[in-house]
Length: 139
Image 1: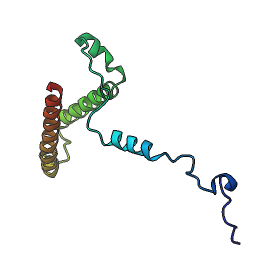
Image 2: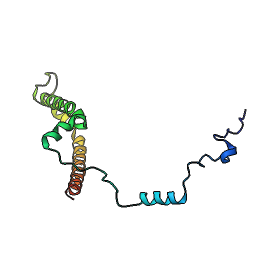
Image 3: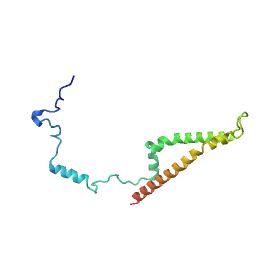
Image 4: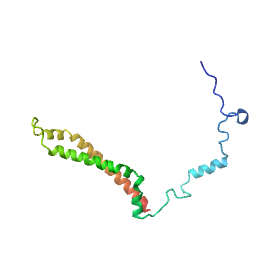
């Protein structure tokens, strides 16, 4: 069955059922808000400037992403590098062809192309944003 129209959320006798009647501002308030929103000047610094010592700054890394990710990434990358080194240096099984590693390595050549593309793109993006951040910092 169909339900009746929704009940009004406010007293109709006071504001005619208009939900926004008390939230509207006057023309002067609207003009002031619009001028503040479209202004190019800031009344207060967005990021407060400070000049900490290096030792103090290095102690502040406890809550950063580097602190959370660095140990795990170092362990993971070391494990992968050791696994690859062991794979490439240990003798192969006697029942396979001696060049079994080379066939596996040649099948990874598409991965090398992806790596080259991704590394050049990442290098460009990082160098661009680092140079932009440095120029903003210098100014």
